[in-house]
Amino acid sequence: EAQVTQNPRYLITVTGKKLTVTCSQNMNHEYMSWYRQDPGLGLRQIYYSMNVEVTDKGDVPEGYKVSRKEKRNFPLILESPSPNQTSLYFCASSPTRESYNEQFFGPGTRLTVL
Amino acid sequence: AQSVSQHNHHVILSEAASLELGCNYSYGGTVNLFWYVQYPGQHLQLLLKYFSGDPLVKGIKGFEAEFIKSKFSFNLRKPSVQWSDTAEYFCAVNPGSGNTGKLIFGQGTTLQVKP
Image (cartoon, one colour):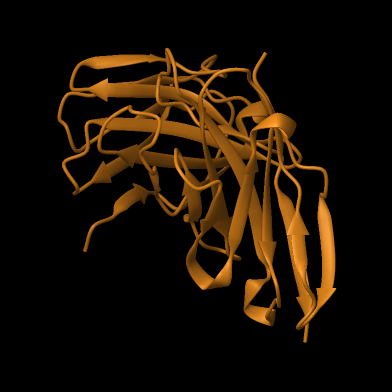
């Protein structure tokens, strides 16, 4: 089944404890992206990747890192999480960055930083 | 800055009522437009999209949307809603030129359908 998977689905952590949220897609998509969803703000892009080893900042990149060493994986790294990073995170992928492409979303990761 | 506005934040309807959710965007160039739906506890799924051609777009589950370029709008409609349509709905824009693949989302509209 074609899908985007994320792990973990739920995570409660404490301020400053490094964490990684994994994202994997099995559709051979070039483009991958991370969004965060906050009430009243919709989804905002954190980072994106147009292909392996090509990543760039989205609208809200502060406090996050990403890497794209393989086409299928695009982990999101929080080196020193803070409470304002408590949010619902979605990974997405699409065949290419072309604007007409549908983006396929993962199931989401609900992160709470205490 | 590019933005997307959804005017209805929370809509409550009875089953069989008609639905129209507003979406306006601020971007003067070519755009590609999407409506995504998020059912409770699930990930976002594409309802429909517009990138060229007929401005009236039909999607899944009986939804449709009309692109009106002069009004910068892409409103979502359904003639008769069902309880199973209870969900959050997001309008999104992907600018056509110089794009980075980023989707710009509206704030979302929560639809509650009463049986």
